[in-house]
Length: 187
Image 1 (cartoon, rainbow, N blue to C red):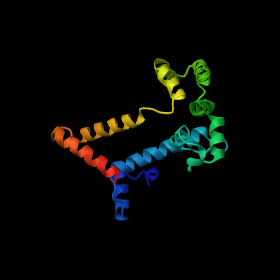
Image 2: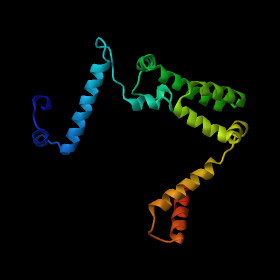
Image 3: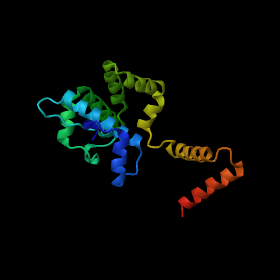
Image 4: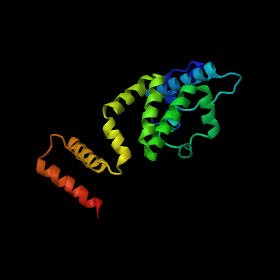
């Protein structure tokens, strides 16, 4: 309808009669997104062979293995790697870091750091600076099987509850609420 010059308000009226309950602004956003996608297809489509994959699914590959990202196939990932070699490089670096952490071989960590430094990627350099700043703690993660994760989780929960209750009640109420939540967890 929009490509035929129909105004947004008329489109809204038309589809509202068919049960649409959203706003006119939502229609504008949807059409704008579709136009961007169409432009991307036209810009990147060489002989009709391009497929658009949402960025969020590719980013999930940095956190989860391909088998756990149901929206992507191996072929789509390989095509993305060919089209975006920097993403392939980043993917390999992230997964090699994970395997180094799980292996417990801290010597490989320093090799990995040196390898990443040569790439000179701004975001990775920021990560590397954080690693270097706290290298002793990172190396301890290789040496010891325990961490302060449990304590950090409890502190995070307390801060969240405190933030939710901000300005409402007393310390005693906050304490009682936290104790109640903890007692429910073990029942």
